[in-house]
Image (cartoon, rainbow, N blue to C red; front, side, top):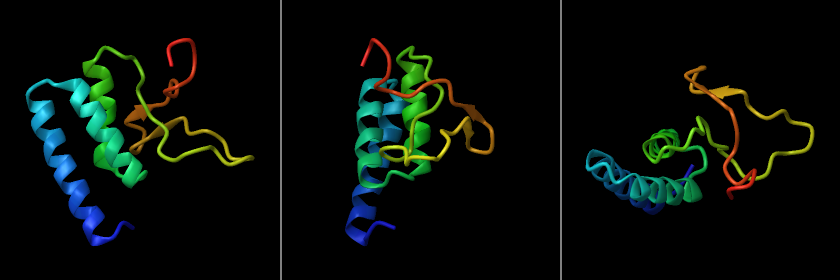
Length: 97
């Protein structure tokens, strides 16, 4: 759980993401969501904003990894948010990194 100062920084970034999404500035939303996930990899709001930004930018990726490297022996997720999103790929894989 992030400390109070980090939590305040995340809240400010989330507010900026709300404003950017309302204006349709999807590249800004994507950047902000990435910054939030750097501070708090499990932040569900940032994960949702990142998926929305990818869709807004025309990227078909429906899910994002929520933590760094996948530990050996653990299976990759097939869905998240109680099945609302299906994992079809991960950013940074394939020909268009």
